[in-house]
Image (cartoon, rainbow, N blue to C red; front, side, top):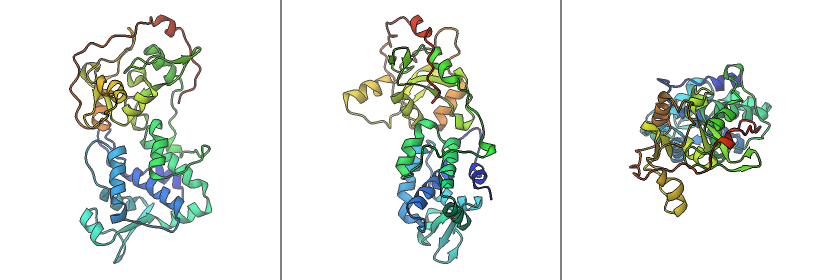
Length: 319
């Protein structure tokens, strides 16, 4: 049985590019728990709150319940559910799962395969991460669920092979003149920019193309906050800041809250800005909550002339 192929083809609700990472999150969580205790099981009532937290942090903005993937993942052949009455899920209702003492774990055949070939777990986890989450979130998601992966653990089934365009980073950074589109940060060591990244607006994992009009040059901090749904890009290419974000320090106010309503810095003339359909996808599928009211204060462009930056040709590989 090709477990990598099965991992890559989980049946999910899809409509108009909507995110539905419920099954992948539960599957990653189950792989992590297997890594810690190969014979253990996940009692729904005991893990419900933790799964809720993961869905709230790494799932789409709309409210959801972990009962849905807990029940439905069994249909993909990688998961099983037992109750007081034996094998089989009582349904996708929270009350039923709690009342029947429902417990889930990886399917017996998969547990056998993972014991026989320990490296398979890491390769399956990589498939789930690559297909459903941007690279900027992989490390912290693994840390959040307690999953330990070796750096060399890679590999995807043929159906998951879609090559990234390695030129995108340089094209996007050049388009935005090597400065963060949100804050103007433009640090470099010699001719090499540091702390600047090419962010996909519509995630690559969800069909986002490696095109400049789907990219933003962002500093590492704002890239992470953009992928977490704290920041977004609204009408008029103005910065959105979620009302759910809370920060009382001067740094949080200056580097995040004060961005609300400010226009993006760049791209340079002649370059297409972020396409409306990519912005709309990010706003509906990633951005959390309601935007904060924008500031009426004008946003000054950094004083340095940008023509010297545009002559740089960094050789840093795409992250």
